[in-house]
Length: 362
Ligand code: KG4
Ligand code: ZN
Image (tube, rainbow, N blue to C red; front, side):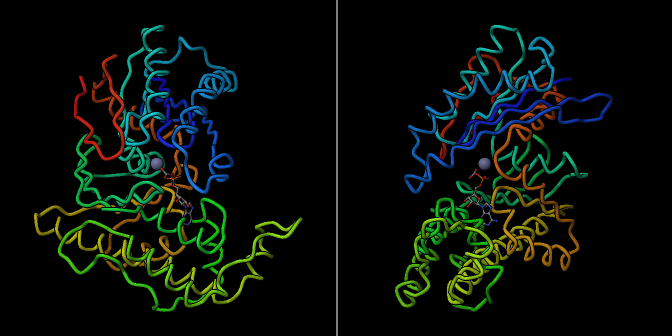
């Protein structure tokens, strides 16, 4: 079975082809076009520009993928497309493109939950058994899931305001780093010392939700008290390279390390609480999956590795290209659902962030 995956939920236009042959799954090709250079000019994602870019790029990228993989349209057996959650205008481009391919070529279509796909792709290169616990940490989402099967994913908790990635990006912006600042903050933090100067936000409760707005406020207060931590703007010819990070003030490096550690510890505390609540219901998670762009963060990775070791649970973090938005995860989750005999028809709708995604497979 050859599956096309289409992802356009945020600021990446991504397509991929994966094939299953006698239970052997192979990525035939994957293409991603990032819109970061456009949105960086505005310091964050501009939804209208994002959908226009998807509309401009999706058909040429599809042609490029088929040409590079030497695949003909009629060879595709299934189309999997991200239906939500995400920016509605962006999702609509991918869903409309998928529907037109489906209608014109009589190919079955299936709508994919982007959050489920982020976590399920952990099974592409690892033995993902169920039940598992899933922590999805990206620029737009911070969710804890009990993963019971590819179609049974139970939300245990989620962020009430900013996502973990957003909290990092906003502190990065306050420090003077370009958007998105998360990866730069990580580079700075790796050169710094952790001090206990930031709160682990929203943990003094019994629930599994997150709230990172308090941490952001603490970040702003830290910079007010330590203005020398704010980085100078780049001089002509200067780049955000190793030298730039090495030359940054120690207070900036320590601030980055302490801030990222506060995020990682908060994620750990709530993950530990989630596992405990499942065990109390006699559900014993076999793996801890950590996915999404923030799973690439070294503080999150180290904290979760230590946590998994001490709790004797297997940690699965998909490789970086599969952690950030990509078409492979959409195609792979589509494959899992197609094998269960599920699909949608042309009534498939796109669902924006904050709205419940219906279980309306056929
Ligand atoms: O999953 P993703 O590519 O896109 C979505 O938001 O869906 O995640 C992007 C987020 C951004 O907030 C980015 O700053 C963050 O992941 N990120 C990182 C690192 N790499 C990416 N944050 C901290 N450390 C990193 N190494
Ligand atoms: Zn995502």
